[in-house]
Amino acid sequence: MELKKKTMQIAMIGLGKMGANMTVRLLNDGHSVVAFDLNEEAIAQAESAGATGARTLDEVVEKLAAPRVVWVMVPAGKPTESTVQALSEKLSPGDVIIDGGNSNFHNTMRRGETVEAKGIGFVDVGTSGGVWGLKEGYSMMVGGSEESVAKVAPALETLAPAADKGWGHVGPIGSGHYVKMIHNGIEYGMMQAYAEGFALMRKREEYGIDLGQVAQIWRYGSVVRSWLLDLTAEALEENPDLDGIAAYVTDSGEGRWTVQEAIDQDLSAPVMTLALLQRLRSREEEGYTEKLLSAMRNKFGGHSIKTAQD
Image 1 (cartoon, rainbow, N blue to C red):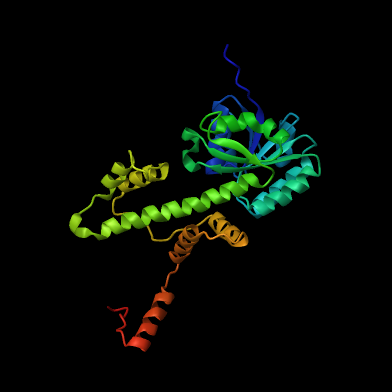
Image 2 (cartoon, rainbow, N blue to C red):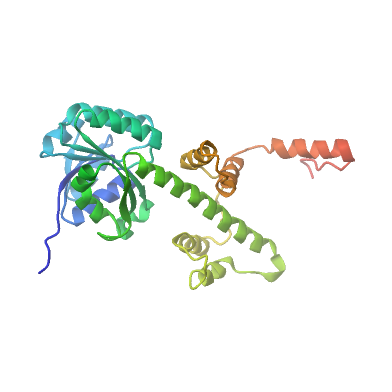
């Protein structure tokens, strides 16, 4: 006998790249979604996909049946802080707030304590999957009480790659965002290693190595194969010389938090630390550090200085 899939009503606050795709994935699996965003066009697009649009947080609460579940998918920091605070004043005991963004776990623990003091459940979901999540599903690291996580489990089962794969309850409030923070730190190191390796092969010009071909070779059977390598191969196929791409790499902040956590725990994490520093280095418009190094070498050893004209 086939078991009937559990569906639920849920609100999605924030319809950016991930929030919009998560809304569609939920709708496609039979869930009812109340969608809210500050951008009217984003709400309209969600409505066209089958969601019920809401233009205010009060309207979100009104359109949800108790016990309510509200998924917050807005940028970390002040947007998340203000949204969670506002919802905690509008929701009722027994309702649940989910923070699915990249919040700092320290802030998550504080928010969770404040929200739960009002009888409202709080769940933090470290969410990975990016723009591919709609098709492939999201990897989700979940923190919160057993009771609160059970209430939102049907949505998690839909958003994950499979109901029993790619997501898990990892611990109390804060643990979901903590694990996701470490995940991103590891991601920094992996990306840096791939980038350095391919750059090194490109430098050996006499071999004429096809980097896209190497990426394809490594995708199968190699111990360094990964989804990240799959995406690297795709990028190299589309633009082998990376024309038009600036050597400027941003960061979401989670790599910084990971490095700080390693310091706080007296744990050596050199790969993640150096990967973060390389990203910061990429943003320097003027290589003052290298200029000063060159000047020092000239002073102590008489080494020539390469001028800007050179």
